[in-house]
Image (tube, rainbow, N blue to C red; front, side):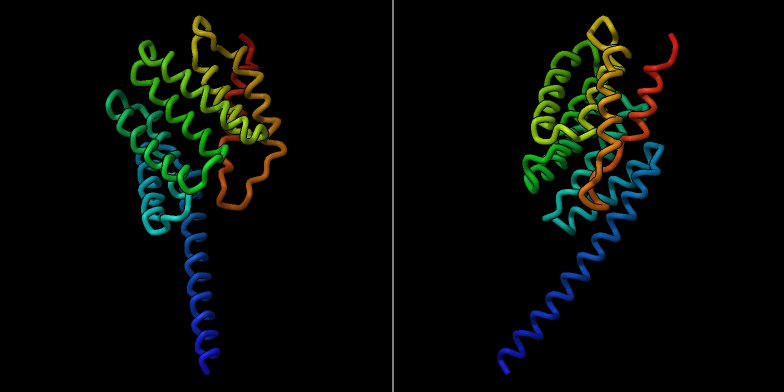
Length: 215
């Protein structure tokens, strides 16, 4: 009888865990779909809020924190300035550090850390470019050391070079090899599952096309 009670308890616990896992998967898939279709500041803000809600319920999962950081860093490119950029980067940094604490030595997390530092440059490119550019590049090297086939490494590096003036070591000619390498990696890349990062292909292609346009 005691063994039967233990077995029943185990079955119910397993079913509850399975149900919770299925709910988490469904919530994440729908929110990732919203993120993939986001175009405006409000789109990314509402999607970030949804990921943050999921993260608060699933505190042992790194991906909701990762995607919340991604959405918050993307808002920095939506026409905001100054202190608002820093505030969003601070928030994104807290979120990506939580993801890192749950899943250390992850190439995707290091790419996002690099991108957040890169976004800080926009507050004052002349004063911040050298400092945060060096930090972002160093973190990207760490990402590459973990997984050299991650296409978002070369997209991020190519994007930084694309938008850096030639006089400071950037430009289309410098960006093109990195973006081409990104596209090569995308052609072979397969995410671990439906929830893992799979963004950036379209943007890499767009930037590469811009590099290949006749001057």
